[in-house]
Image (cartoon, rainbow, N blue to C red; front, side):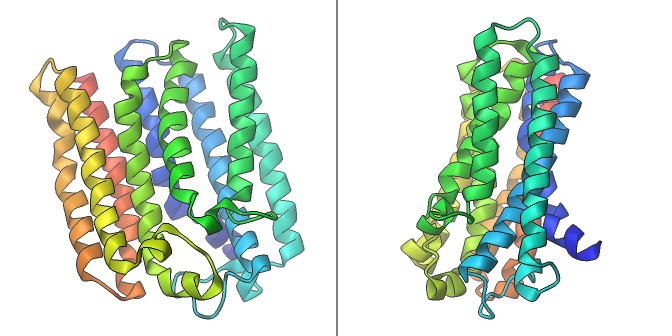
Length: 297
């Protein structure tokens, strides 16, 4: 089981759950929290993230993007620990699990919603599954042309937060675009660190990520832009909805984002950068938890 657990990349799960928790906290603050909806949202998101990780492992291996030049963690299919056909079956399995869990979520969440809401969210769910698979798999993987950042912003930010909030409340609140954007941008920062770490191997194999397109120094500027914009969005939202000082509790996480930016600026070796993927993911989770506590208090 160890190769499968490694291929599922459990360390990505805290980041994945951050947007769901943000939506749940916002719904709870509006006194519309539903524990069943929250649990199924978490389960569906975990299935989607594992699906994405398996598809990424598979896609990079069969396309030749994984090579001996890559300095990140070992990939299961490329290293031969898991065969490509076996990983293909796992991708199908987790696509089915994601769909079943997602439909169950919609069944419980949308009983009092218009019928159109079910079809809209079913379409969003299918888009999530398609995005998870086609990031690096398929004939035209969008991750190889630098569109991964936009996808992460959409699904880890806007869809994750606004969608979760709606499933609890049955209300679209466009004011929540600001906290949703913060969540999404911090997730983009994790992807950017990953791509900066792999910049040399990606360039050699024709994977045109944002850092490959920008170059190392400009990718660092881009990283700071992501971090500062994310912090700015949540500050703007809080100040425009300010009622008490505890709402600023999330600012205790800001030094961790600054530390991350300084590390990406100073460090050059892949082995030195790799720990900051986990650091950024956990910092994002802490940010969301502190934000939620501030709301609830």
